[in-house]
View (cartoon, rainbow, N blue to C red):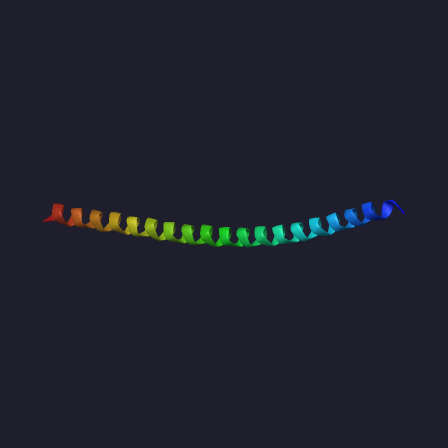
Length: 70
């Protein structure tokens, strides 16, 4: 039975490999979820900044028109 230690090591190696793969997939899934949340938050904030800038442009434009009319 010289093949028994080899088979045992092979099975042990496969079990370790499966455990490592499962943990890696969990970490990658959490990373992807966090990345998605960060991208969404960044896009929301960028949209707010664009809206504020557009509002300021409109306000300055109206202010300049009032100064020209008077």
